[in-house]
Amino acid sequence: MNQIEYYEKKLKYETDSWDLSEMLNNNGGVIVIDARSSEAYAAEHIPSAINMPHRLMTEASTVQLDKNKLYVTYCDGIGCNASSKGALNMARLGFNVKELIGGLDWWKRDGYETSGKKGVAGKKIICGC
Image (cartoon, rainbow, N blue to C red; front, side, top):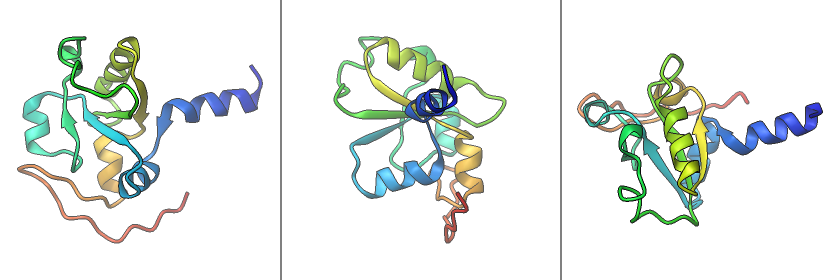
């Protein structure tokens, strides 16, 4: 694999908070999945995200989901691999999926709003990427 192929493949399976926000704001047909526990989701999550812990992803639990949509999984961030496990599970179930790099930590660091018991208001976003 050459460098171009490597980066094309990487971008096919990963997204950052700016790109996710743009997809959400432009009604890009994306569904955000919080792959952490229901307790972590209740405490704080990306607005509009649905909670589907990676351990519970099965054909039965995903039957109501549209396989024509793009799904973006996330977890806490670096040091947590629930988003990777969730993305793998969703891909095995036949879904088009990407992983949010940096997870909820980078989403907040970049200034985006969160919901839940510990939710925070967003701030003006100035993306440097």
